[in-house]
Length: 279
Ligand code: C2E
Ligand code: CA
Ligand code: CA
Ligand code: CA
Image (cartoon, rainbow, N blue to C red; front, side, top):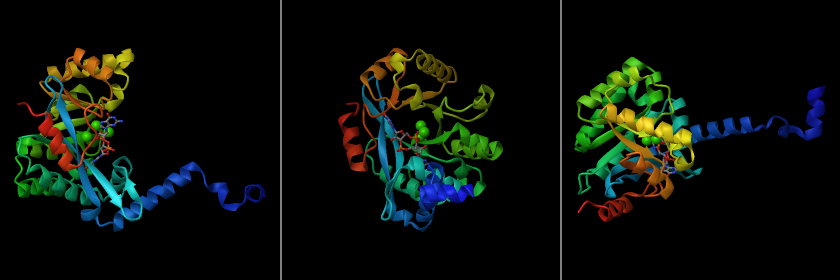
């Protein structure tokens, strides 16, 4: 009786159309469109510069996925990547994205580095890592100029298998970056057990760094930790001069963020690199 009363009161469908339900419907829609998408055609990569703040030179680029769907328009990777992971189809996105990123990078004149994001699901099975190695070898790109970015949470999936995959990629010569560093709960013991070459400090610690004593202390200790472990450290999401000055004072050297450049289509990325080359 209550149900009918409410239903009459609010007028049918509105009753259960909560925000949560709306979110679920949206995700289901994205998933079904993704499943039928021509991924080779609709996916592309853009490149965000990683800059050495000591001399302003470009060290390399992080490849970031873009999806332009004929039905949905442009969809952010922050939404379609997790959906593809949950749907068990991330591998079918990783493969074309990685090929496209390497196809671009192989033609760069300067020996710039390429960073590429891998998801846990790309690494928690032996055939996933074989597919990745196959793509690197086919491309002809030097694995020593490649940084594969993995988040801490990737290792919570299947620690043994993911660690093994990462070790295989490391032996091939690839750099291994721990992405979104500081946001997970990795113990120091665990971090030491991984074959890492780089940390990427998460943007959340950089926003208003100059005004936040807590963030300042966190960034300071993450930089100290990376130095103690002999690892490079890239600081993400730098948007203002004030943040940059605070990072310089803390001894940060590699930075990625809108202050320098947003992610760019390949051609513009190359123009950026040429403008900021060491000579
Ligand atoms: P991420 O790996 O942490 O990448 C950094 C994100 O921060 C990118 O968002 C980048 O555009 C954004 N960003 C960079 N500098 C700034 C800044 O100064 N301010 C702000 N507000 N944002 C900044 P994007 O391209 O939307 O990617 C979102 C996430 O999607 C990535 O976070 C990554 O987790 C995932 N992703 C993107 N491409 C791929 C991919 O090819 N494969 C996988 N597995 N994940 C990907
Ligand atoms: Ca990343
Ligand atoms: Ca990140
Ligand atoms: Ca992130």
